[in-house]
Length: 174
Ligand SMILES: Cc1cc2nc3c(=O)[nH]c(=O)nc-3n(C[C@H](O)[C@H](O)[C@H](O)COP(=O)(O)O)c2cc1C
Image 1 (cartoon, helix red, strand yellow):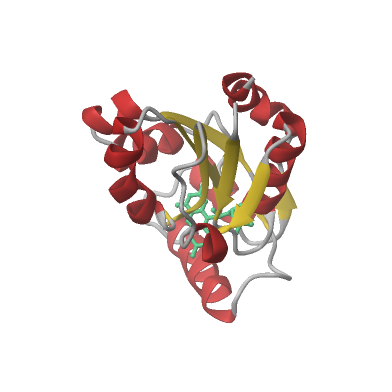
Image 2: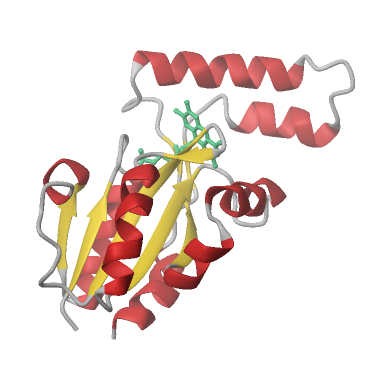
């Protein structure tokens, strides 16, 4: 199967997952800037990786627009989303449910890979947004212990990425 991984990454977690997938599946891997201009007709499978931002997924609209024609041409479509939330966080499911319609779920398989936060590589704006978000959660009138833990967690860098999350994706490409 000739496959390609196209990824959009800001601080490197999605890029790392894309490279792991391409190494394990033995396929090409390109960033969004290059991949979004490519002719994908020569591939049997297209994998798209996006990072999570404020409950949505960056550049996903671009890929979703392409999905119907790629699916009609018989291509296998896989999407992996990368976020700072641990996989067991219920917000992950909610975000993924909101991001895709039932029709889209029929033509693409969707995966989640937990990433992390890297304040050193983040833009000034991203840093500011996250700091504001952490403050907002912690200062809620009815803030729970979980809210406080979350606010503490997102106020600094961490890496909860793990290669094991690519296993089901790579299995689809074999
Ligand atoms: C402004 C902003 C909003 C974010 N919103 C979410 C979110 O809603 N859910 C989540 O899991 N992670 C969120 N994140 C964390 C990123 O998705 C996470 O750091 C991811 O690993 C970044 O991927 P990248 O390194 O490929 O850019 C947010 C990060 C920033 C900067």
